[in-house]
Length: 287
Image (cartoon, rainbow, N blue to C red; front, side, top):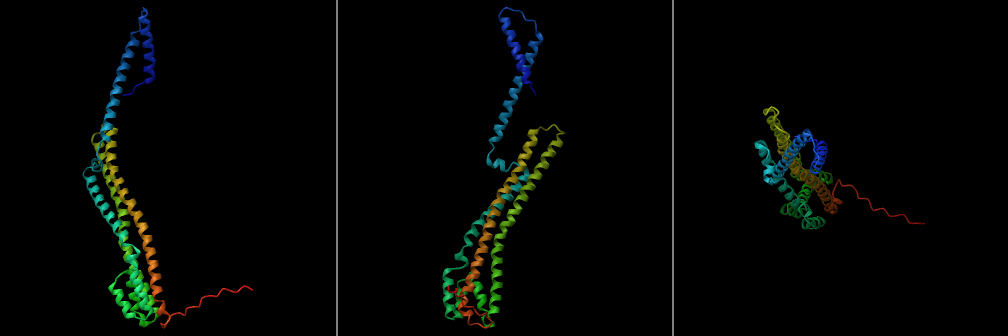
């Protein structure tokens, strides 16, 4: 219901002027002015009532609980929300599990590192290999692979260590790649729920032959967009955690390679096929 506020105020001022003149004893013969003033007054009251009704509807919509908002997308929306909740639980578990697993102490145990280094420095290869099997870790696996090729020369040892390093890196990456998969699937599921909800909303508008108002359409779209928000809330932390954990894996693998090469230095010099180690350069003396 539209209301010409400017016209209403203009007629209101004229009507008040007429009332003042009548109170002063002057006769006013303008029934059309009184009639138009009465009509606009009724329209003003009706507009105020409509505004109060819309405010009441908005307040009622704002009082929806969190669960009502989440599961307001119909059967399709509820099904997708359940899937997204399961994905969120899985993503949280993977983030916590990998954050606790990808520590230097778990990849390169200090006790094993020191024990193996001392045994290899003394030439006790079998004892060092036994320690690797008793205290398994990515570092121990790489050292054990190198020890199994000692009798074939340093080139074979180096190749075995490279292959075992690639295998351990792949194993560590494989577990955190699930976070990347979840980060890509969650927004797609949310988008699926949104598209399905909008199809339902426009279908209701088509079924009503255009009689559905903007409020009905907005409610359908509002319910449909909830799944997209839920998918993004899962995807953003998952992808962020994946990037952080991937960098941690790269750092741990680099430290593992350095540690494995370092413990082999005492026996590398005595192995056939190894490269001669150059003496450190002496800085030139100043004349």
